[in-house]
Amino acid sequence: MPYKAETKRETIQSLVDAVVEQVIAPSADQLDREKIFPKANMLALAAKRLNGILLPEHLGGLAAGYTEFSVIAEKIAAHCPSTGLVYTMHIEAADAIYRHGTEAQHQKWLLPIQEGQFGTTSTSERVSGGRYWINASRAKRTPGGYQLDLEKSFTTSSGYADFYVVQTGSPEADAADDLSYFIIEGTDRGISWGEWDALGVRGNHSASLTLAGVRVPEEDLLGGEGGGKMIIEHSVAYLLGLGSVWTGLAGGIVEEVTAYAKRNHHQDVNKSLSDYQVIRGLLAKAAIQYKGLTAWLKQLRHDIDLQVQHNEMLAPSTQQDLLAFKIHASETVNDIAQIAMDITGGYGYKIGKLERFYRDARAGMVMGPSNNLARDLLAKQLVGLSNNLWEETST
Image 1 (tube, rainbow, N blue to C red):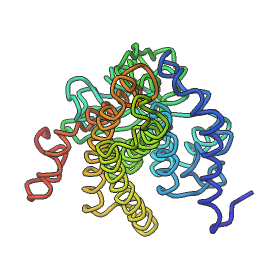
Image 2: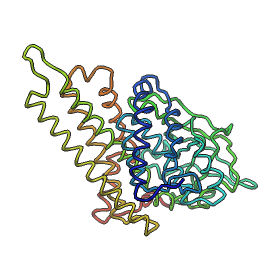
Image 3: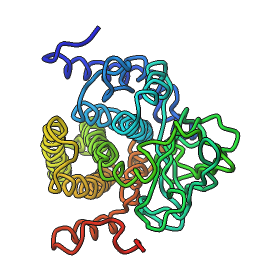
């Protein structure tokens, strides 16, 4: 049954709160310790139709906007950033198929999402580092379709996704921005993947992905040959999802360390940690930083939804804000994680929730585009040097 517009947002928040409380939060520590991929979490989200948050109702989705997607990613990541990232990459893949795919592709790849299937995008290659929009690989035309032989360096959900939206160079491409996207069945025998053994977000399995002799029928080319540049330039979910994940984690850290300071006592002086002015000052600093994140994120996703409703592409200023917020959110959550460690001392350093959050927070600054690269891209746009991602590498 479709939700009424005035109650949709509240209903969605209630749905994700229930999944987080009953499924995601209780499993988060074990998922991290044992490097368990959060498939059970994804299935629980799908059961509430949250995996189709941006899809229309006739495809089994909730027909919501980027605000609702951002809120879900934020709430998940307050307890399990690994699941938040897996969810983000699935939504990006599904959104790309919906916005750039054919009706036949919608039916084939998006309808099964309501039954629990999920996907991911696969873009980055070792040769170009954090510039995930640059590929050395090229698709090869075959009778009735294409063949892919390539290796991706980091692919979230590698080995677990039901489908992959893979970016590579178009056949016979002579320019770096001549890219094409293909939708690949996750069970294809030509797919293999590496091991994921990382410092943090240990459940998202962002390992290498290798495609060897993978045949793709022509009907699974997404957006046409050479359509990859447009797909990248129109992407919203990836950067918004990352910013939402790190904002959610920041909130989770603030909540956990505040509770710790209130319940832990120094019995020799009969004081809780919160009785010390220096501790309260650190807590206030963390809370202020978190509030700043949430305010910017709320405005950013509101602006995105307004523009998407009226235009096909975001305004350049909003695209810049997405990139800037990714930088700011990932660095702010690290500042907050360090504050939490300063407050809790040795107890926070021991294996546990805050220690896990501290490790998870480190991932955001190196995710493509890494913050140093992203800052340079942003600065070039601000001073009018270039807003072309491929300018230095086009031939």
